[in-house]
Image (cartoon, rainbow, N blue to C red):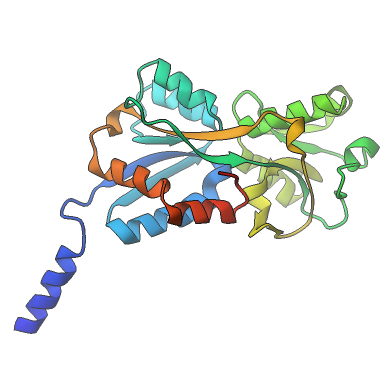
Length: 247
């Protein structure tokens, strides 16, 4: 009985004295790495991560309307900066956690060539693109087509996703034969998981700097500070890199 009591005491003191919850609004493109990061953070700290995934533009509107998020992991740097200017954040907490990469992808092998020339031939029925007004990856896709002088040509073939997660589903399900998605959705360890893809050259679109910021309601929470520290640490960085993001 004494030994059991010691074991229970050791287990108790190994966890934080005040385990808490962290509510995080996460850009849809960062879904896969966030799930891995959250699991490791919970294991290491005992804190619980409540993650919501969606379009950065929608999260902005929800936050301004009082949504109870502690942290925003955006798909851009403009939205966190805007929230800073509007005094909706904890001061001096904004930082870049990842740099996104755009990919033209088809769920079928041989559809998208290594140079993206399929965009010039037009041998596709529908082209999935995230809403450029809500999703930075959608804006990057539009910028790419503009640089290639193809936006007007193919706009009638657009299937528009509310966010990059829905855009991916359009392509994965076959509703669109190809589409612009985040590299993190279709690559793992720099290896394409399925289908065919063209890594869009970075000079064709504005850098997708993905910033994080602590929101006003999370400013005084130790669990929030712990999550930010973890996200900036080596373990999280290794996970982020493994999904094809730059740092």
